Length: 470
Image (spheres, rainbow, N blue to C red):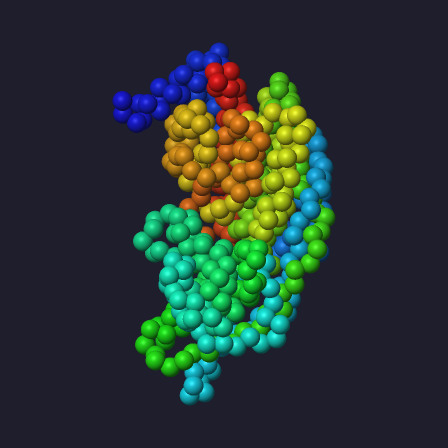
């Protein structure tokens, strides 16, 4: 059967459970989607809400005063939109501080000094003054693992692996490169290095380094870890390929790891009229790294999902199931908001059937990825004809999201859905000083909110028949 015909066949089966004919239901849904997009594009609040989050609050690293400001901001925004219920959920979060601005340079025996731009990786220990040592370069973690300890011991490692420009989906390029950031300090320490610097995870060349979380391993020395800007990393790599001189790297970082701190997820609901104990969760993470303003990561996800619920309320939609928006705290360096939410949801005896996350930026919507069973995927693919006028085409198996992922461990048959926007520019801004409100396009942001709201409406309306069939 041709793929398009197969989708239409699935759509017919799904609709048959609702008591409406395919034509009647399709027309009703098509009209509702048009209303959703009209509301988003004519009266959308997401862009101004994002402006407020970025400019009134700013960067919001877990454990910081600004993160607590964001919690209060989120609560009052949700209350002002008049949702049925708004409340806090207590979460204990890690508390790491960058400290004073990092400084770094490298030098050669002839006395030449080159200053570079670095950022400490999230969770790094400090250098305790200026750390200086000979620099040795490796292409990736595998090369470090194969190296002799005598060639690394007492030195600073530079991991030069770039994100692969040939990968069309940039998140795949990021995933392939993530280990140098996540585990670079572990592998370097295993061979006796005293510090590690990595090439920032970005596909573009600029002077802004990218931070992000990293790991240590119990029993191994904790060594300082930082990221070089891609521009500086390229220049350093080129030099090290041609020079026979010893290069000495010098850097100073004043990071602090402090005791865990109390924070909160912020939650709002539109109550279900038929199945109030059945929950469809949607959300993003309220925290961000401490550089930039967290506009794309994940201010966009916060306003996407708040706006998705606001639109349905503005259109006087009465959901069958309870629709719950969650502003998760601490996705960036621990995911304690997501873990706590999943655990408390299970303990409360709620029935969680679906969850949607937006955490890939505020760019033009392309569709949704599905982490679930074949029925979840087939249901969403059955909506393809409805989404075609809005240029959404990606409805495939994939990743749901970090915040909602713990729900899968608590609810066996839950479907996790990730919002998929265009990814080509995301890693220009990810985890660096460029992630500011000015780099978000209003129309693209509002189209994303409309797409999520439309999917939420369709899932709430059409999921129940599939659930009965399980």
